[in-house]
Image 1 (cartoon, rainbow, N blue to C red):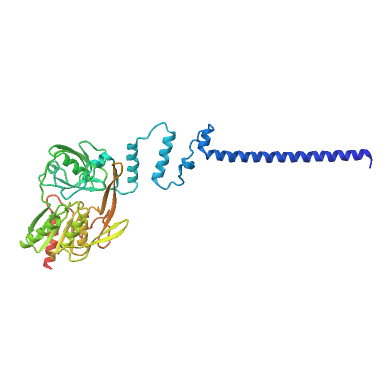
Image 2 (image 1 turned 45 degrees about the horizontal axis):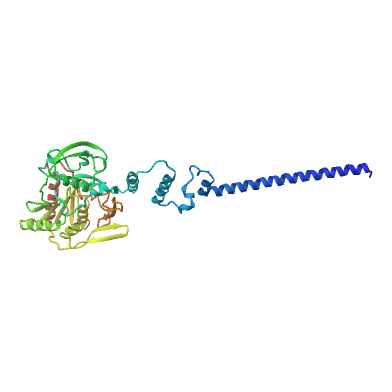
Length: 428
């Protein structure tokens, strides 16, 4: 091989080696860029997870970055309302130019929380409203405007209107809901709030705004206002009537002494010749469960009166006391018979002790509890439900009468049917 050929081959080898070295340098450069990008990404990720460090470097926290990424907050989950509210509260406190109105926010948040439970009786009372809230006692009188109030889905309504009262004269009828008092329609008025307001205005006139719905569940209806003088109305809680051989006992409310009053009424009517009884619970808003159990004991010798369900389980209440009569009994109910009065009617019906006549009752088979909060407000919630002795629900269902009879104006055909029902049992 000649010298020229050797030189040519050497130049080719040298060129190939240069190309290979260039290729290796490009690979190395690409690898270096990749490693630098990775390092930058990891550094950015680290910095974004350290808001304090970012702030010290002059970079504000990214908009929309969750405070949950702040390891100093200690929050790792958001499985409670309080943690979510706290998250927003902390964010606003640190970054917002505006401040939160604590009282307004509390009313809004807790009001929405109670509404989200789907419990129609659940509500939050701010401190001012709670201070005007009174609990029912056995001393509750009929002082006011001549109306016995009950409550349905957190709203007060007229369960009974006294004959001869100013309210009756102005056209108030059972079933009318209270919309406002003296122009205050800012919230739904509960029964205890209405009773307390009227008691506080004894001797003065009060403007009561009413709404007459087509049914207890209706949200709208005919609205009207009445100006009524608040004064004490004296009306017997238990009244009696003898219709030949049938004694009629009307019980307006289940108060602390109802059992004694009904016992006396049965004994008096028996002495006058009553061989059977009608217990009129129409428009009775209920009252003491213990008294409802004792009232059932006047007519039942044994058996369960009611089952009470709570979040701790269920328990039963059985008859207690001394039975005063084994005579036939008929119980009257209507759409305004509520709570403990429904318990009494259902107990006598399920134990086959009485025939129930009238219209399906209100279906308010639950117990509400009001608890004061540390800052002076309070919450009310449903703590228990009533079931009949046979396990039937009362809440939202009511007591279905054995004999359905609609109310007529002018003639009380319901009591006529009830009396006839007792007489038919006597004749058989």
